[in-house]
Amino acid sequence: SYLLISYIIIFCLPYIFGLNSHFQYYLIGGIGMPLIFMSPKSGKVRYILSLLSILIYLLVVLSAKDFKPMISLEQEILTRLALINDILVFLTVFAVVAFLGIENTKSLNRIQLKNIQLIKNKENIENFAYILAHDIQAPIANSVGIHMLLRTFIEDKEEAVDLVKKLEDNAQNTLKKISSILKHSTSAFQKQD
Image (cartoon, rainbow, N blue to C red; front, side, top):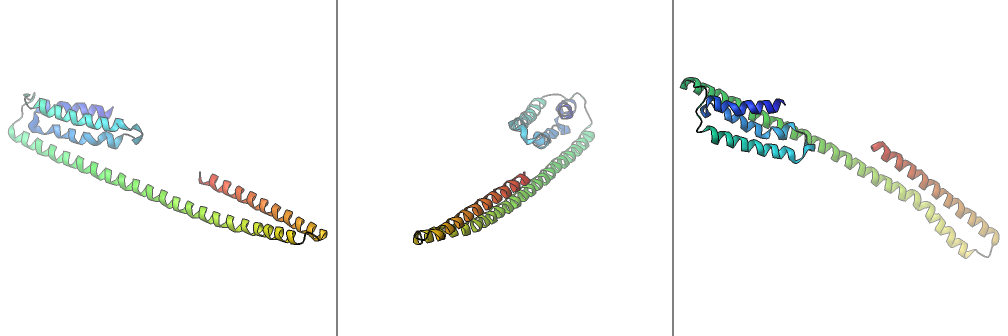
């Protein structure tokens, strides 16, 4: 509501004091206000309001050009008022540019922090994959070796039973490691949320 009231006042001032007072230049600063003060979540509304501000500025300049001011001021006072208004408009535009620069820097910092976190997450996943491959490779290699031995020593029943027991132990060990890795990865991903 404050923004709307200030727009109405600024809209009326060029008609009250005339275009030579340079009050209409305040509308230029208003062009970027929706982009600054409205949330990015408002989407296209921000841009529509900024475009509307441009149209209002053009309307004021074109319509007030032939309009006789309601309050006539001496030329010296009008010149000083125009200078003050020019300085204030310049300072407003400078403040808006500075604000946008600061916001841009903050956004870039947030993006850099997200990138750092993504790189850490990628490294964690790579480490996890390496550990997973290493921990699972050994029991599977043992199982393959035992299978090969079983084929060659199938004649000796006692040794075959012993090899089958080792296969079962390796399979159980592999299942435990996979279960442990799954629990670890699930808890790690839940901590990141």
